[in-house]
Length: 446
Ligand code: ZN
Ligand code: ZN
Image 1: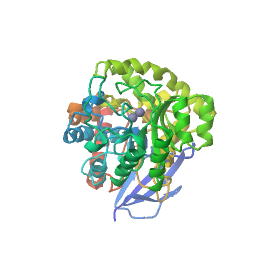
Image 2 (image 1 turned 135 degrees about the horizontal axis):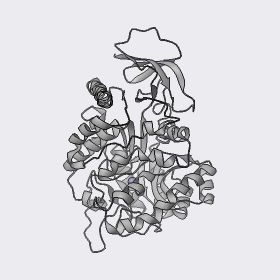
Image 3 (image 1 turned 90 degrees about the vertical axis):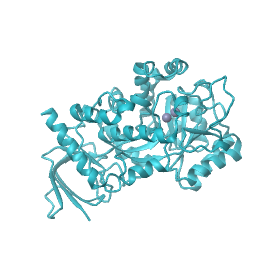
Image 4 (image 1 turned 180 degrees about the horizontal axis):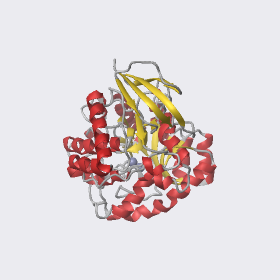
C-alpha cells in the first residue's frame, strides 16, 4: 500500500461552492482516506505541502471522441485502428495535462483504449466508453457521401473501434446494443437527429423510430446503464427523453417547453459549445468538409442561449466538448464560453460532481471526499473567482506530432495541474512523471 499526504490545501470539493482553507488529505493507494481541517497524524510514504494552493477533483469531460484523429470523420473511418490508437494516445495525454482525469467517450473508443489507460500503458483520463455509436442508415454516424453505396461500417461488417455502426429496425438495434454492452460499453450512444459532421443528414432530420429507441433503452437498462443521444432540435430531444433516453448530447436548439420536459423526466443535457467555436475558427483550415461547415451555423448561435434555457428550467447540465482532431486543444475553452452565462461554481460543479453523477459514479469521482478515487488536480489560485486557472488554452497541438507538442505544452501551459491519480489510472511511475511535469512548468514560468 502506498500513502500520500497532501498538506495545507485549499479545497474545492466538487460540491460546495465555498473553498476550505487549511485542509489536509490522506490518500491510500487509489482512494482518498481522510479529509481534515487539521494536520493528520500519519507517516505517509509521500508528503506534499501544497502551500495553500487549491486542491480539486480532476475534471470530467462527458462528451469526448478519442479516435477523432481528424475533423473529417469520413477520413477517420478509413484509417486503421492501429493508427487511430496512436493518435488517441496523444489526445488523451494532452487532456490529462489539462486536468481532465475522466472522459466519457461518445463514440469510437472501446475496451482497448480504456485498458491502455487503466493499466498505465498510456497516461490519460479514465475512459467511460460507448463503443460504436448506433446510427440508422443515413444517420449521423453514416459517413458515406451521396455517391457512395458500399457499406463498410454496416452492422454485418462488424468493424470494431469505428466511430459508429449502422443498425436499422428493432432486431438490428437490439443486437448492436447488446454487442456494445457485451464489449463492456458503460453506456450506449445513439444518433437521434441530423448532425454537423455527417454528409447527408440535415440538422432537422429525426433519426430512429420510437420502437427502435425504446428497444435500445431497454437493452441499456437491462445492463443497469443508460442511453446518451445526439440530438439538436427540440422535437428530437423531446422524442428521446419521452422514450427513456437519459442523456441528451448538444441540445443546442432546445426550447423552454422541451427543457421543462427534460427536467420532469430527470434527463441530463450535455452542451458541447467548445467544438462549434473551434470549428468556426479553424474547421476549414483543418479539413472539416465544406458541407459540414455550412451546417455549423444552424446550431452554433443557439448554443449559448441553450444554457440560459436549461438553467431556467432547472435541467441537470453536464460538461462536454465534442472536439475533433487538432481542435482538442480547445477543450478548456468550454469553461470560458459557459462563463458568459453561468457562474464559475456552477460550471466547475458541473464538470466534477455533476458529471460524476451523470456517469453513474457519484461519490467515486468528481469529489474530494473520503472513499472517492484520488483523481485530483491542484491549481494555483481560486478557480471559483478565476476560471482561467482551469481553462488554460493549451498550446498548438498537431495530432501528427503529439509527443513533441507535450514538450511545447510543458514549456508554456498556463494551467498548472499537479495530477494525482490512483495507481489504476497512472501507476506511481506515471505519478512521478506528472510531478516532474508540473515541476518543469513551474521552472518554465518562474
Ligand atoms: Zn453528436
Ligand atoms: Zn460527439
